[in-house]
Every structure is written in structure tokens, then in C-alpha cells.
Image 1 (cartoon, rainbow, N blue to C red):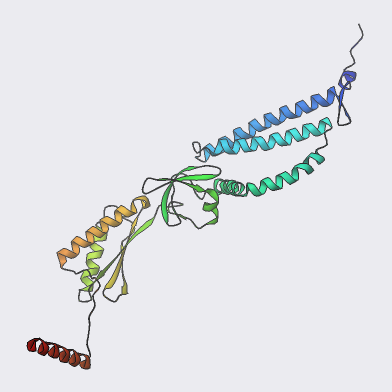
Image 2: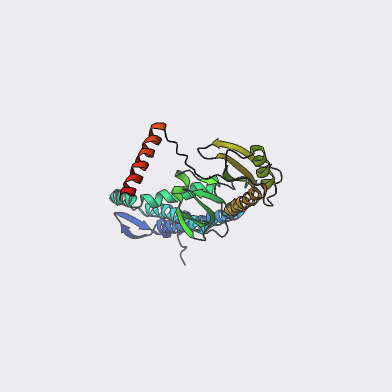
Amino acid sequence: MPRMDFKAILDYPLFSLAGTKLTVATLALAVIVVIITLIISRLVRRGIKRGFVNRGLKKTGTPDAVGKLVHYILLVIGLSIALQTLGVKLSALFAAGAVFAVGLGFAMQTIVQNFVSGVILLVERAITPGDILEVQGTVVRVAQMKIRSTIVKTLDGEDLVVPNSQLVQAPVKNFTLEEPDYRVRVKVGVVYAADMRLVERCLREVSTGMTWRREDHDPMVFLNDFGNNAVIFEVAVWTNDPWNAPLYKSELNWGIWERFAQEGVVIAFPQVDVHFDEPVVRGLQSLTALSGGKAQAG
């Protein structure tokens, strides 16, 4: 029985593709490239998922999205190498697809922008699920972070879908980035005739008695301004729960109202004093007298 020539088998031509003879060796090499690409993609996706889990993003949906994206990128690279191995010239294909890619790029500009912003957020970790943010004047809590958008919940219980580009490009307050310190501020105006030291003492005692305030931060009382109708005071109390700040502000206002009522401190309201010059007074008196005389004559 003749010995099988292994080299001859590998060099055996199967068919021609784009003017290039396809042999058993080139076909086997292309298949091996695809298999290696799939193995590398699986290992990379597993590493990405493990990295996201270590960062606390196990249930945000981001690991799967990033893993799929990496898988497709690696698959395109592997298939390109396999086709080059088979002798397929990709330059013409790329040239034809360049025009389509440009048009697709313009059409998907917003999507790509949000995707890149999502990657930046995931890398920088400046915003994480559970953080309390202020986005365009609205206080929200981050519920879920995805690769294109972030799901947040408002104080009214509404779920909002915020594009990631908005969180990256626009100024965003993160009340819980390092420490959840937040100052609850209340302004109140009292009449000018009030005892200002008594007002200051009442505000300080009321703010100190708030159960939700931080014990290691003393409340602050400021004589803020001299208004047209009132002397304006401002009270600032630290808390470590910014999500419930509206409730705490209401409690502080109630405390100030009740304490002022006990001490007889009057909360100011707009008033207008009208002063007449002497010629105006005499003119009004003359007009009144003339009107009275006509009434008697009638």
C-alpha cells in the first residue's frame, strides 16, 4: 500500500476563488483562525463580565452589552484574517463599504455618542447605581446603568431614561460621589422690630434639635440680607441623606414656625407705607370739602 503523502494532501487544490487556488491547507488555516477567534472572544467576554462583577455592576445589563460588542469586533477581525488567508481581497470590499459606513456614521451619530459616553462612565466610575444626582435641576436616584442610557428614578417615583451623553457633557451634581453630605437650607424673614439675637437663638436651637442632622456638623445660622420688608435669616443643616432633603426641609420649616409662635417672633410679609406731601394733603382736603358741599346742596 503506497504511503500517503501528507504534504500533497495539504497542497491539493480544491477550487479557485477570485483567481486564487484554494487548497486544503489554506481552508484548514482559515477554519483554525475562526475557531481561535471564537475562543479568544469567549475568554475576553468572560474576563469583562468578571471585571464588571468586581465593580458591582452584575445586574446592570452592561456586562452583556459590552461583551457582545467586543465579540462582534473580534469576530469581524477574525473573519477578515480568514478571508485574507483564503485569498479574498478585502481592499475593494472596504472601498465599497466606506461610502456606506460614512452614511451610517452620520445616521448613528447620536447612538455612537451615547455609547462612547457609556464607556466613559463605566471606566471613570463617577456615577454608579444608587447615586443621588441632580440633572438639569431634577434630583434623581440612579437605578440602572446601560451602555447607551441610564435609568433614573425621580422623587415622584417616575422612571426616566437619560442618554449617557447628557451625563458626560452636561454638569451633573453627584451628592453621593464620595460622602453623602448635603446641606438643607431654609430662609425666613422677620420684621425689623424683632429681637434679632432671639431670632438667631431660636433658629439655632430648632436646627440643632433635628433628629436627621449630622452630629459631627453644627448647624449654621446666617443673617443673610436686609430686605425691603424683612430681615432675612438662613439656616443650613447638614444631613447624610440627600434623597429625603425635601422632607427634612419641611420639618425644619415647621419647627421654625412653631418656635417663633411660642416666642412671639413675627414672620414678615410685604407691606407698603404711603406718605403724602403737604400740598397733596391740602388738595385732597379741598376736594373732599367740595364733594361734601355739593352733596348737601343736592
